[in-house]
Amino acid sequence: MKISDKTKYRVLEIIPGALVWVTFILAILLSFWKPLWVIYFVIVFCIYWLFRVLYFVFYMAISWRRFQKDVSTDWLEKIKELPDWENFYHLVVLPTSKESLEVLRSTFENLETSHYPLDKMIVVLSGEERNKESFLRNAEEIKKEFGDKFHRLLITMHPDNLVGEIKGKGSNAHWAGFRAKELIDELKIPYEKIVVSYFDCDTCVHPEYFSCLAYKYITHPRRERAAFQPVALYNNNIWDSMSLMRIAAFGTTFWLLTELAKPDRLFTFSSHSIAFKALVDVDFWQKDVVTDDSRIFLQCFIRYGGEFEVVPMYVPVSMDTVMAETPWRSLVNLYKQQRRWAWGVEHFPYMVWHFSRGTLKTDKGEIKVPKIPFWKRLKYLWNLGEGMYSWATAPILMFVLSKLPLWVGKNEIGTTAFFQTAPLVLKWLLTAAMLGMVVSAILFLFLLPPRPKNKSPFKFVIMLVQWALLPISLILFGSIPAVEAQTRLMLGKYLGFWVTEKARK
Image (cartoon, rainbow, N blue to C red; front, side, top):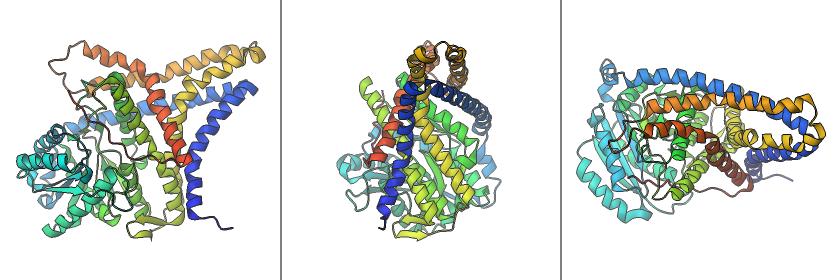
């Protein structure tokens, strides 16, 4: 009997969640049956995690030095040394849903302060038809205030309930991309002369961002096959948000900083930039996935047979931390945000499927693409798979399940020397692994924006001490949402796109 493609794909979706649950079930069962085995495993796992922490600290240090250098560089002066630089344009795509005029205005005010010539920028603000009334009202204000600041300001509205789409940022950006292409064709700007920045609508860029991006794009030997990933900060409302929000947000920043130091591992994440020509070749961001910001890298990577890269940028962009009207809603929203990010596990079946078939899904159906070398396919599958697996399992194994075999094995092996020293070994390993927390806490203080006048200097102490909550954050807003995301994919309970609520004091 022939197995359908749909069934084959479902099997691939089951694999990540099944590995997580097999790990947890075996850890619990073996704690009662073979507690010594589990203790050995936990110690080995903690040693592995300690090496991961040292690896994290090493690459964090590299990225921090590069960050300091790049944010202090006058990139516009470097740009002006390049021939023909005036003929390159920035296209900024800003999908929006229910964001307030205050949020949109702050983003446009920030764009206006860029050191790069504004007459070389095309900005697209794309709203949702289901929020038509509020969007048109906000768009009119934005057009009135900023319509003459850029080369072009394009206001467009994504229709609701189009076939083959899910409600989300990706479908909005997909629509906006094609509308931008129509404008660019009308202006007769060569695709190769345009680099696109795809931002969350609360994204505020460093003044040197567009100059740095233009320099890297123009000087790249294969600029049409490259994306550019900045450092993602969450500083817009950092002084007003809760401690757990700050820890989760900067945990993401520090993870990204370590990844930037190893470009061969990079995916695009959140706000990023990419060659317009590449976007056209893959029909823009995919309109039926939740994690469109990282999927676009895979679309291009597959389209070009693995000949596509993400270039690190150490000039930052800043977004909002999760913050709602009440602390409880903030916590719920943080959980949903982390679950949505963990839904990046949907890339695993997508990668296996398209890597093995040598095809790419586009608006025109699946098209044949060049074959990706085996070692590249294996490397990217391992990077994604191991990362998602560790995200879901590591904190629970280290901080929760590591206690179980020590508790249930007291009667059976409690008198052995190994059993009696195991708690001390585990304690030492976990304490040593806290080095990453100490480094994060110190670096966090350097990345903070200036303290507002209405905030007490004592707030700095809170900002430092809050990192003691890291183990709690890793479990409640790391492992658990990641386990839920992978379990949902395993069971076919697909996650829709959830828009993070934006609230500011």
